[in-house]
Image (cartoon, rainbow, N blue to C red):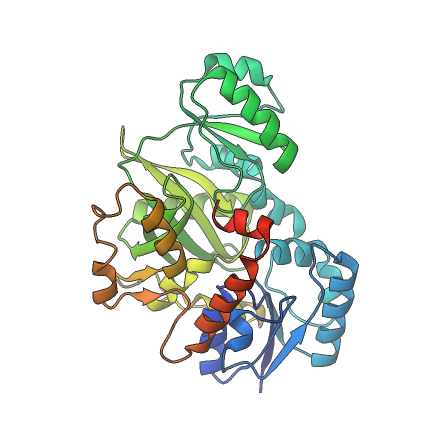
Length: 386
């Protein structure tokens, strides 16, 4: 029986991978630095392993995971989560002695993880982006005098909406930039795209020869924080133009496997503009599986060297909500009673939930319990409720 290991059982996207591969008769083992997490509560994994947090003990993480992989003789190992993806990619040589890792090399990974590199790669690919300024190349005071306000200030490396702000005058931009850089590192400034055009995610699968194998695009109907952040309600959409733009920039970078491209449509000219590429498997990938695109099995087959037959079809519309985020959206959004579809209406339409499933209900309990413990920590609570 083929056997796989999953690093990052505390991350939501591990669940559709667990379900897809286990249903195909592949033995699944999972690991995490958390004793209580969604993946550990799933009924499908045969074994569960604990290892040190890579953020707190990088060397211990590498040693323990290497030992697990050596003893387990896993055919393929998957990685979930921002910090897990970074450290596994950084130390991939230590792991690839024992298993197949369907990840990109470190330089390619950093091309997507660092938004500055991503935005610069979009230019030769002919992919539109919001107008962008880089303070590490041009003095922030010079930028502050020539941009049109409001603007968007973003860290070059961040997750979700962390570090995101919307300065409305030169003084605020300069002050916010100094504080954001001190906390998050180098930043960039983008023109503010007015609302009304919609935000989209394009999930695109390229094989090792950069041939297109599968894709799926979905619209972020609601997100948290409400001003812009991680999606809480998604819907698949027919936007071939966005998929083609995402494919262009991923090929320019040389990204293989699943690539996640964030786009915003500018209502002033109806142009989709690239915001970022997530250098990890994102938590909302489950909607693609629901729409008929089995990215987990495709990634497994690519790692095993099997032939991949292109299939660019997926179901529209398919809805999926992230309940915890949607509840936070409801309490924070001024449009809580005007959203289409409505917040309460979503409960009665049979929308799928990101974590919960009737076939495997306990991960939702594990996830909820993990969040409850997380809320006891002031810093973790601040990040969650940002």
